[in-house]
Length: 276
Ligand code: RM4
Ligand code: NI
Image 1: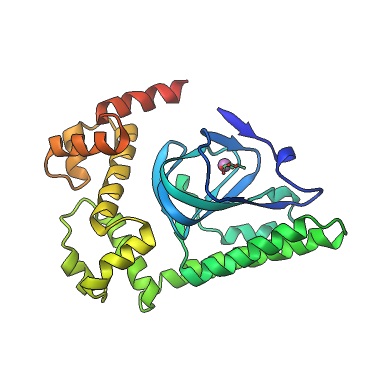
Image 2: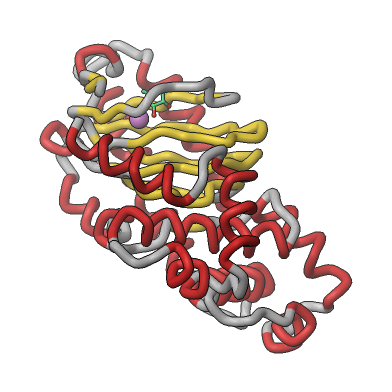
């Protein structure tokens, strides 16, 4: 597997670099000797981090530390921006404590709302133009802007936990699906619980996740199934049930349709990958 090196991605003595991927082209699994914040702007796909799949769509933010491996799969118009940085070179590295845990620590990716995405975009383009400046203050400016980005993400993370906010009600519903994917899901009931009219829920789900409510639920279930196939030795039938499928054959055929291999083949592939 490739390791990307800091020498190839930073301007001068800058500790931060903004790399737009509009769209993200196919890129093989790799790790870095720097840290990478990935923020999706539009489209959707699967983001594998250390072999574990996560749904990615507008507003998903992932924090990858040096040494973690990742790649994207089943992308559909996925556009994102990478903010890469070298913590040892930052003067304000203590700020990094504000970033939520990485998926490897079992935290779900962070999600930010539309107005925060716009604010991030503005910061991205200022960081890019400052990166090209040669005066000594540009290094400070890039770091100051990067600090703003971290604070913005931290505040946004706190905001999405506040379920009285309109945007956050949808975020709450999505979080609920993420955590209760094994249960039978009644969308009308959920719409009611989260105070979102059923008619607008579907539209807002497509807007937020790039997928219809049912397809999103299917994706969360498949991602969980992939994790269980790799991490446990449970039977395919047990895994199907643990992920909310009540028919193991239906589960296997959906899995094949989405991932291109059967659950057992997937388990074998991943096992041989681990020893490669
Ligand atoms: C690639 C891809 C990778 C990133 C490099 C710098 O296109 O986005 O994740 O590490 O760029
Ligand atoms: Ni990368």
